[in-house]
Image 1 (cartoon, one colour):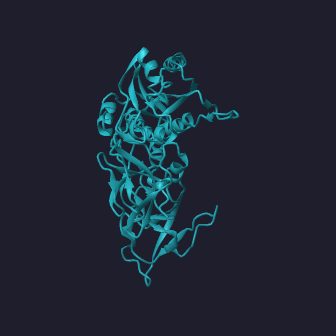
Image 2 (cartoon, rainbow, N blue to C red):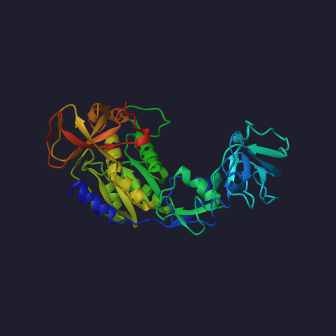
Image 3 (cartoon, rainbow, N blue to C red):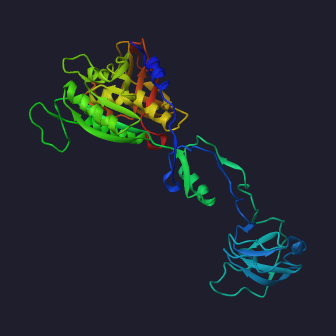
Length: 417
C-alpha cells in the first residue's frame, strides 16, 4: 500500500498543464496567464498633473516670497482629456486639472491651494493672473511620461495567477481579451443504491447524494468546471454506463465517489478495469484509505471513498493539486501553519488528517478538535477551519506538541478570532 507522498507523486507525474484559451479580460481573475503581457504604450502616456492647480516654470518662481510674490499671467485653461492649446513662456502659467496633459514649457504644477483659492469654481474662467508666494521645485506635482510603465516592458510573466488589481493594467493597454490556461473539465459521479437526488424525499435506508455537490463545489474552488452526472447504482453495468456517459463529454478528469472498497457491492474497480486500468486503489491515510487512481478509456480517473469526509479529504490531497497543475498553477502545496495542539491526538500509524479549529492564542496558533472524527461526520468538517496532520508512523501526539495543519481556506477567509 502506498504512502500519501508516494501516491501523490505518482498522480502528479501523470498530468501536464492544459492548453490556452482566449477570454474576456474582466473575467480573468484567478486564471493563469498563458503568455507574457508586454506594455503597448507608456503609462502614463503623457506628462500629467497630479493636482488641480497651475502649470508653471519653476525658474519663474525662484525668487518668490511672502514679501515679494511673483505674479504670472494666466494664458490658458487645460482640462483633463484635452491636448494643451498653449505653450508656456517666461512669466506665464496655465490653469490645469488633475490628470491633464502638462503643456510644453511647464516643468511644475502649483496646487490651487497655494494660490490663495481653496478650489476652482465650476465653469468659471481662470483668473487673468496669479500671485505666488514661494518657490517650487522643478517636477513638482507632475507625473512624468512612462513613470509607471515603459512601452515594451514585460509587466506580467506567463504563469502568473491574475488578481483583481491586474485587470486594470490590462485595460490600460486596451487588452479586451487575454490568453489564459483553460479550466479543467471534471466529470463527477456518485455510486450507491442508497443514494437519491437532493430534491427527492427519503425512504427507509436512503440518504441524499451530498458527495456530488461537495465534489462539484471543490472542483469550482480549485479552478475546474464540474460536469455532474448523477448517481450510478451498485451494478457493474450501471457504473459502466455512467463512465461511458462521462467519457462522451471528453472531460479532463473523471471523479467518482464510493464503490472502490472491498465490499460485495463495491463495483467501481471492476467497471473501470473493463475499459481502463487502475494504478493503485489503496493509500495509507486516514480518512480515505480506499482511494483509486487510473484511467478509463484514456481519461484520468479518481475513485474516492463514499463517506463524505473521506471523499472531501482525499479530494483535497489528490484531486486539488491535479486541478491546479492542469490549470497552470506552479505552487501546488496546500497552505500549512505550525500549531500547538491543546489535547492529545491519536492515530493508527497511517498519515492522518483530523478536523480542527485553529485560533490565535497570544503569539501562537492553537488547535483543538472540531468534533467527532468519524469519516461520516460532515458537521465536524463544517465547523473546522483546518486539518491537523499526524505524520505517517506516528500513533500519538501529546497535548502541547507542535504539528502542521492545513488551513482549509485562503488567509483572507480564515477567522482567527
